[in-house]
Length: 136
Length: 298
Image 1 (cartoon, rainbow over the protein chains, first blue to last red):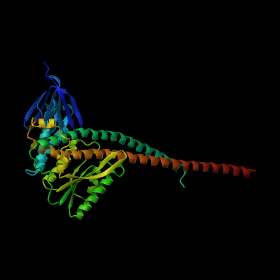
Image 2 (cartoon, rainbow over the protein chains, first blue to last red):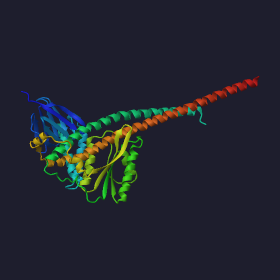
Image 3 (cartoon, each protein chain N blue to C red):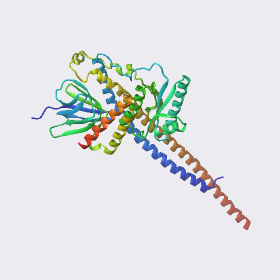
Image 4 (spheres, each protein chain N blue to C red):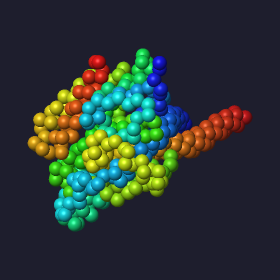
């Protein structure tokens, strides 16, 4: 039997990238992987860069490379707010590899315990996740 | 006096110029429409972040002390971000930002405050470098179509400089977009973030909301979510400034190019009149010569 579905909206600063009913949302928060089904309790969470999977059905899955962001579930609908949501086929591997390299250099250059360093480390995690989605 | 041939040559060259400026005007108009849509596209995201922040701050037992909200006791160095374009030919668009930046820097100098320059856009970068100024950071190559990642790169640079103590305040100067024909230079303080701007509750909560608030699951706890949400305001503010600047740039270029086209048309009219007058003078001259020749033969 098909699972019941609920509306999901994915918003980025560059506009809406997805708005449809799905059976499950699969993503990752700071505490670990999470799957949201219909009638989930109200939730607010921080999202980490990973692969965002929106299951319209068992076989029809929409995938995105997701940047940092937030997830809010309320009134049986989910709102995914992320800085980036890139379709896997749109990921420009060489460009992201170059940026990953740059970010790694920035981590090396930055002083221990500086804000600069922690931001560069976030950058590294993000591009690693994106490249993981591209090859996955 | 210029010969008829010279004048015709000049008319032709003005006509060619007008073709170019007209084409540039149309390109700018198309890009302006797209830039306007992108400003619109940001709004739902920014509103959602604002609502989420207000919800998290109501749930949080205490507002976390974030370095980005803290005002520095003594202001010795101010980071000044100038948002310019990568290209010129846009009327006063770039020049007015650089002028405003210079004015601000002079004011700061009068208060014995050092200016650390940050710039986005090639025009501003080359202009500051030409004056031999050292730049705290420069970001270029995207002003036609800034992506959120560009805004984040700038925010990372400025917030790190603020938190790590290289600057004591960060200000931004950019072209705010009002309409296709109106842009204004805006000057805002970016860091420290104003707690009042960020954490004020927006809409009135209904009884119902208050009841349900207890049922929310937070992952991690609301304080940590806030600690992450608040710095996002810097990125969003910068992104909005970049988008408005881009729309302003296309608007300013459109106006500049329309003026150039109009001016070319005016010059073409004047020169055409001049050419006709000369042609008439030549014809008159020839008739006079023929008549004089005939007269002499009589």
